[in-house]
Length: 293
Image (cartoon, rainbow, N blue to C red):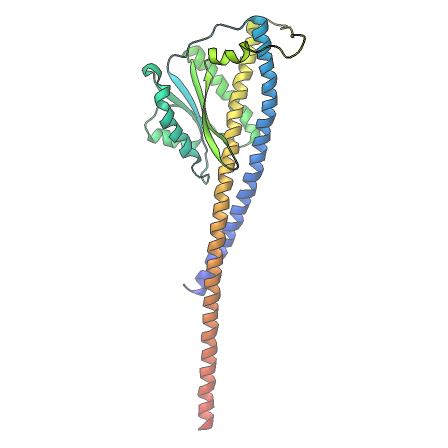
């Protein structure tokens, strides 16, 4: 390889390394942003759970619905690449869990957020009914969650949708992540048992200052919002953790490549300089030989 070619490769590697470092820094910031959002949501979720407890203790609960009928799964992936096996993990979990979701021979359809998972589901021939925009920032999560809730409400009223699941990656130890499939609907006996078996932690049980059905409707909407927001927050934090890990590996590889190219460049320059010196010496020897003659 010529010296000029090596110089171009070193310049390209340096520019690429700068891009990777920028992406790594952005991923680090994004991870903490989404983690803080999920942590804040957990505090609000505990408050809503206390309100559910008041509802069960004051109103005596509500008629529970059996889990029957077709299942809908909202699968959350990523739009961008460079995040390792992030989307493949979601697709593998679908492959693993789908037989259980086909309860009593019922169908399973998918709602998707994230172009990469969408492509995988379409390629596998699965029934994709809805595609939602993946939030690109924390501020966009609220808007997308509300859009999904509105569509869920319409499907429940018009199509009688009763079984709804969330599938997303969530942070695990360190930079790792793991898929989680969670049943969001229906609110069944298993879900209600968390409140029916508890007692109020304070001396005085709060009153409900509205009709029980209105109080339930408000709590139900908050339940959906918290569940969906948490799923997106966990997924986006996991995606950025995966991207950070990929960028760290890329940075190491580029550094090693740059070191190798720099060594080759130095060796080529040394060879060139040595050749030029030999030419000078040869020329000098030739001139001296003529002078001696």
